Length: 218
Image (cartoon, rainbow, N blue to C red):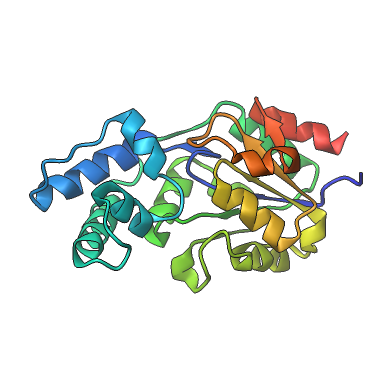
C-alpha cells in the first residue's frame, strides 16, 4: 500500500474530547426551554455525531423537522457558540501526531458537523488550526457526512485525490463519508464516542493510540 499523501480528521471524538462541552451546552439549552431532561456524560454519547440538529432530535425523541426539535437545535447552537471549549482538550497523542505529519510535509484538514463558529473557536483554543489546510462544517455550504462533499473539498484544497487521503473518525458517519469519498483508507479511533458498526468492521483500521497513524508513513 502506498503512503498516504493527506489526512482528513473528524473533530469531536477524534481530535478533541468535547463530550463535557456538548453535555453542558445541551443541558443549558434544555433548561432554557423548560425541559426536565438532563444528560450525563454517558447518556450524551449516543447523541453525538451527525450534527446539532440530529442531537436535538435524538434527545427529544422527535423527528428532525419537528418544531420542538428545531427550537432545541437553534438554542443549543446559540449557546454552544458562547461556550464552545470550556472543558474540551485534545486527545492524547493528537498534537504529537499532527506535528509529526506536518514535519513530513503531509497536509491535513478537518470535517465536522459542529457549527462553524464553534468549530473555529475550538480549533483555535486547542491550538490545532495551525496544522490544518482547511476545516469545514455543513454551514460552509456542504452536505453533512456521510455525504462525501466536505472530504472532496478538503482534498481539492490540499491538492490531492481522495484515493490518496485517509479519513480518520469515530462514528459511522465518518466511516461512511470516507468510503463514499473513495478515500485510500479509513481509520477508526477507539477513544471516540461510538462503536464502529458491525458491517464496517473489516473496512476500517482500528486505532488504539492516535500516534499509530504515523505507522502508515513507514
